[in-house]
Image 1 (cartoon, rainbow over the protein chains, first blue to last red):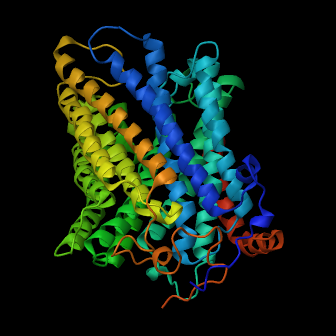
Image 2: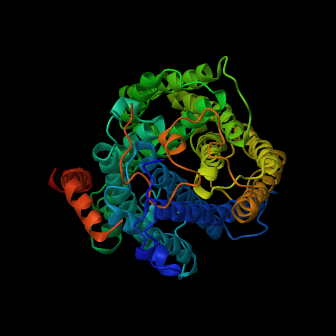
Image 3: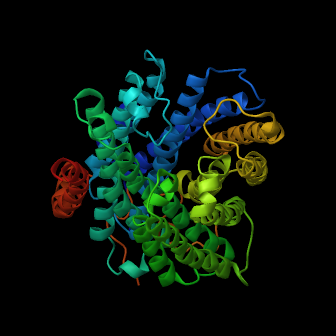
Length: 524
Length: 38
């Protein structure tokens, strides 16, 4: 414990709200990221429930079609940019400095700015509903030329995406610099915990992908207001160009969300299997391979725009190639558990839930990679089912695993294990009730992003809507568990998880002090 | 963490930060130039 400073410098920190506004401490900023993300998760969740309420029965009952389209758009944007990405940046802020033995992030002031850009951006997305014409009803993919025809809500969405992009780019620069320059003596690259490796790779993806999205929405903005014709066929532009640029960002974005989730699971599974991670080096190489391949497959999202068959074949095979490194990771996680001395506390349950359901989502991704199949399934509920298996059962379950795993280190108190297990089982059951049936709807031909549907889709839609409300209510239990742990949780032992062997568990007290590793530890 | 410690750390890391920001800027501008010039 010699790495911990005796006094916590509380004299140089303002109190009250100004502490949070002015803080440059990675733990404070991580906490703010996580709460912001949970708030946006609730807002995006309410939008999902509005969507599922309308789809409970065929016909138009609750909302106007235009508002329904705005809900699908905002739900997607808020969940991707406001909930999942900030959640993992929150983990990165809390954990990376502690896991590599650094005192804080490389650019603490920029870190503060990265976070404080998020609330205005999130507010813009929400406020866009209240301007004349409402928000953008274009889908989170913001395809031209529909974006050119929208009201001023579209401009607010574009501005929000710009701000969110700036925040992500600054956050990524901070993370890469911290990992490259601030590791403790002896912490070589191949000794870094896998969570740190996955974030290093993700941050590079963000630095290359987010500016491309910023470029795409800037061109949309100039097309709308400044007389350019990037995407307007009438002026010599090309709407399909938008799709190419968007998905050059959009496919890496999938891995920007998934790879940190892999990182969390790669910490949790060894800790509860009480064995070192199987195939550490192959995990690093597999993650890097996935990241590189993610930039080479973007047009598999657009098989139906009319591309040459040679291009379709290339994108099909390149996409299927991603299954190889992903398979390496899945087998490594399973091999880590093999003959391990396993226990099934809540973090491990969510990690195993992730393993099962993310693999299923990856498998339906492989189905969609097949061009002839995708031509049938494009824009159906099969796609909706597929990416919710990846985003919810993949990324969100991994984030839950991470919160339960690190919460004792963050607050020094334990969560209620019984309630945590209830949260897991309710989530996994209602998740599958909501989304498994959507595979059947998609196979039967139900298109996505519609407020009304043919009668033959009624039964599965009703089941899906019931599941969605169950899943949503289960997340209120998560909020209750968090508040209960923070207010009256039992004191956490120094190291509540036997198999946890990273620096934050072995070299720091629980809860982690406000300033840690001001004198770097030596890693052997 | 004092102001001067933060200053020193930011200065030490500035080169890496600028290189990464330049990469981001190239990806942002690159697509514009590609469309505007060719």
